[in-house]
Length: 209
Image 1 (tube, rainbow, N blue to C red):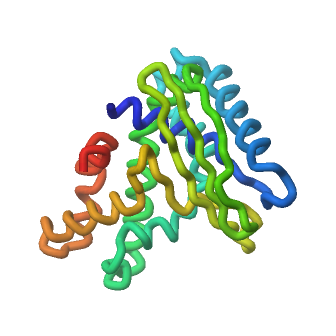
Image 2 (cartoon, helix red, strand yellow):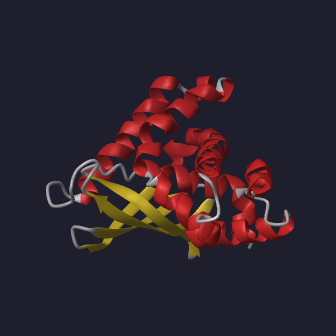
């Protein structure tokens, strides 16, 4: 299940590199273009190189996927009511920890990108918010719906991922609940939660909760 979920995250994230306002370019065109770019990156690198050197996949994720995510707002959502209690170092420390956890968890799944087929449905686009559903079909699983929620950032002139749901699981809420439980586990010590986050938050754990 871990590899299936990781593959879904990779393929749907890579497919959604919104670099222009939706009014200027059709979302489906942006999705298809970026998906092909990631496939090209993997083909050029080669599966053997990716498996032998994790940094190859890490670089692809950093270049193609991380720019899509509104990291600051996502950090705020996951920390929930504890965000206001955290100091600047703790906020950026948790942001960096989530980023590293994302990269390390999903980098190895890039080798499966060639096995994936998908269908795209635009559910909402009001020029400020957008919601796109991707039906992902892999060799490891039946068709799985993945809903991406976007907000348009005027400052960046780009769409950013605000949240997503995988087969009905709201990732933002699942991670916020996990942060809440870990705060209780570590006696409301934010530093301890950050230090132990990567070891406790895994795809299969989120799926099971």
